[in-house]
Length: 402
Length: 177
Image 1 (cartoon, each protein chain N blue to C red):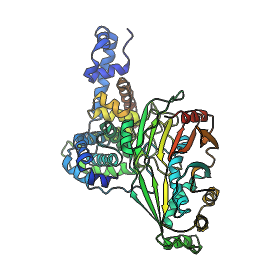
Image 2 (cartoon, rainbow over the protein chains, first blue to last red; image 1 turned 60 degrees about the vertical axis):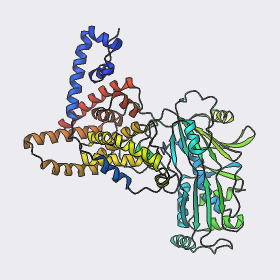
Image 3 (cartoon, helix red, strand yellow; image 1 turned 45 degrees about the horizontal axis):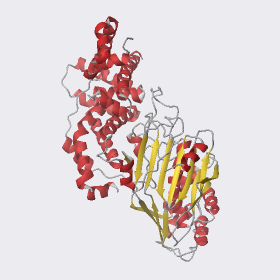
């Protein structure tokens, strides 16, 4: 038998479970390994001394009190996605569907009164800056969540179904190279209400040195737009590390890494904070998802304002300060009541129409395997397949989902 | 359901299991953070942050809860160690606190110096080896360390041995600087 490796010897120092079997028998008869064990053991002992600290004297009950009374962080405008690490192209593609929900606030506002029920998808070239500018909607009114999105990591498809009410789609065959390790994420339905404020809009316009255009008939101060998104489920394939606190909340401390390479760090795992907005707070080498398959109830929007689509859309884009890209995007949507706009990050991906078993869908990305996504709407549900896979593979998975 | 709603309607289910999880794991989470920071007060601060973060997004009855907390404790504490502003603050706080102790002053200086060097060395190390040291030194079993780091139990010995060698090197490097 070959000599025991350092790792095995290290474990023998202080793990009783390791002192059995063939390894233990080898150790008994091998003087070489015995002397190495001595050395490893001595090292371990001196490191333990180095790492010694004064013990903390904790009062669990008091600590629980403090945590229970801590003010709850309000979700910001938008979702916090667990596992989301900004700055990576495939992930941005994967997030496109979520971000689309935010776009709906704008699109929905442009539609007034009628129920928005998308049945097809359309690409909207948009820059990340444009996406972030959606948060500026709060300059034109107030956004409140009457039902907050609650994103949960589920242990099984059954739990994800229990959390969301949606059946997790099953992938027939994973492309080569994609890990079969899967994480389920479910989110409950969320309802956001945007209340238009003429005063705020006027102030925003004034801020850019302009006056607010006169309100068309129908839009009044206090007009509301109610947007419902989700519930949604997603399965994420890849050997993900458990999410760190930072990656989950996006509110931790930012720091610069040590610069040394961790064993197990993947090339893309340390993607820096990108343009996604949710700053990542840790340098934990977490693997990126390789494939995300998601399903969401198609978002819907209703508005209280009783005005025509054209009037509202026109009015919206006439508000000073709105980015030209977003205006162009809004203008590009021909039929907002039946079209789900998918913002395609400009410069990140190309888009093309694909047929998913008779439903017209949208494919983003390319065939290089760097990243691609397919998004389509069927029977009131929005589906998305995205990952660091070839576009042909993404389409294939989409067509064979069960 | 948001946390507030959970509190109201889920008092019997999730609220209770969160409390149970807190009681079961709080001390260990503090211990892990303290092992990294060598500062019990800041370690408690980290532990509470970790629990609040967990509660915000996860179900307390999730099987992965303890592993998640252990890992988060190690990494959050390591992140703090690397933040230079906080480090300075802590060193000052520690100096005050420790000057009040009654130990042979010369000996105390040496202990403080060693402890400071180890913290600097941990901060310089990559997150995974630094975490493996903190987790194991806090008394987690090999199986628990493996779960927290998402590695096979067979890998823990190797990671630990390598991390110990690295720590030794980093501490020596700190001394010679």
